[in-house]
Image 1 (cartoon, helix red, strand yellow):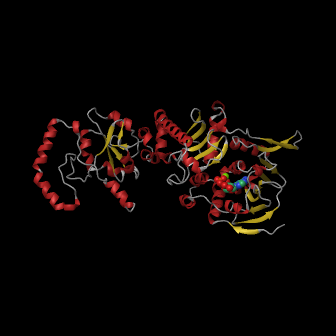
Image 2 (cartoon, protein in one colour):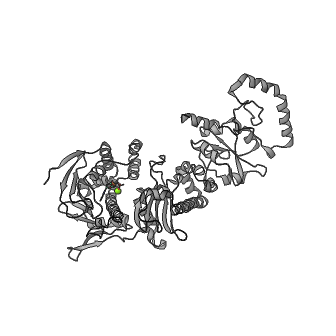
Length: 556
Ligand code: ADP
Ligand code: MG
């Protein structure tokens, strides 16, 4: 045998291994889901590559995953004849964490077991989850087209050994030496039930030894149904099926909040299966990572993270689209400017928005849960997606003077409904905090007149309101902007009083303006205050004070 070389794991891998072993012990079985899904990915990748080089499939074209147990040796083996890995790939994939946002992920860990285990789940436990059940792992792999293989082995402690091997067939064998406290998994029935639970939908056959009546192995048999879930008839798919599938593709331990499965025919033909999660992924705030849509073409997996298929403000949506029209050799560049992609994106966007509208109508409480989790992301919508502005606006929720809580619960429709016939604008204020909005003196006159004002205080709100001009033909009006004209809401007497007051103060105003000089644009009499003596407002066309603060913070 050839000499083995020892390599150290990247620090983050050591950390992840440690965390995983200590926080996922109640979720041990997921190791099999991860390893089988890697084997299936490897088959997908090979199939894709073979589209341009059919010699890669060679004489071994029946792609399958095989799972077996050796009770005497205390091992479970997961084998595939997929794409395999080169030595370099082994070192990157099984020795480092190459994902973007890794540092961010580690910084979010709290030490709280339940929270952390969910976070780790979402981050993607992947291959390293082997060590939840194994005290040592051996990987034997040969890349498609290569003639030598590589063996990687590790006890999951700080390092791994690497050596060159002869391997008869292309693909990868993962051999788990099972820990004593996990020997329940050395059982074919148990493994079979885990495979049907998590991997039934995989289009690749997952095989286990076929047993005759005496328990002797008689070849192999597939234990999954082998039909991609989304290609089945909706009527034949149970809620349980949809939920398990979600957990597999979204790496979530929780059930999804909602899903929608659509077969679209017509100008473009595709199937989509879209999920809205219950909880925010750990990197929701990173606009660059984690677009959760996988792209398939005629059931062949093409790519993860197909950004072109879902707008950024819906980046929390998980799922897949399977196109019948796109070419199999589609690239990210082709996707960028493509009629078919655009149409899939537009109709899926509409689908998600209408799914959310329906939820808001049917189950306000569940919708509120959604809003509290993803509302701030949805608020990016009006700026990004003009075509759907009104639909998105209908989904927004705000705190308001009508409620006594900082929780954003008021919809624009509810606001419009409460509005008097004479009111022709939607009034709002943006401030640094809910309290600052609520206690702003500019609201005094509105309170007095019983006019509802929306109270906005999230970072994104100024941006949002600079893109939302009106809703159902009612314009938005900031109460801290310009010359507030309550128009028809004022009666004749008050109007007259106002005019008189303005006249009476003319000389004082001039003195104020002189004294303040360049610091102000102008000083005028206001009728919007009832208790406070003065307030600062911005001109209708100028940057608001909030926006000015944001720009300043951004170094502009
Ligand atoms: P992920 O699947 O999310 O990329 P994993 O930790 O599960 O993360 O796997 C890391 C990488 O190792 C995979 O992206 C793949 O490149 C490689 N890999 C793992 N298992 C296999 C396999 N059976 N065949 C080929 N490559 C594999
Ligand atoms: Mg994986």
